[in-house]
Image (tube, rainbow, N blue to C red):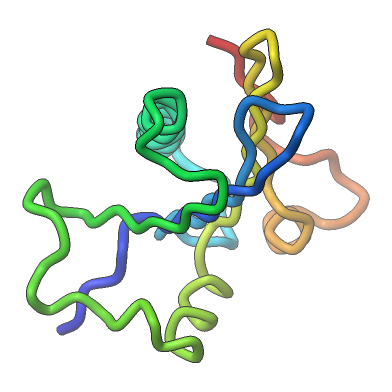
Length: 132
């Protein structure tokens, strides 16, 4: 069985922000993240910010994190397969990430994810932003 990444991140260069990008996490798109998943998302974001601040993450970086500590497994999916990765993104949680000049962190679920989680008349679930 092929292994999908735990996450994919595409950094966006935003002049007014320290850090911005789109994070795709291999969690179900149609459910609110559980507390342990939220913690894992924040750990991923913290690591990405540290990499960006240390110069290890270029302004247009695209990187993948794998579920195992050893990096990319031998049976990993081909992340260059656009059809396969598009299908993965469609079923995964998509999160916008921004870090402002004062270090404020803003995380939000994309609108398609929110629509799948809740009927349109209900408010979004979970924190829109997190500040550490």
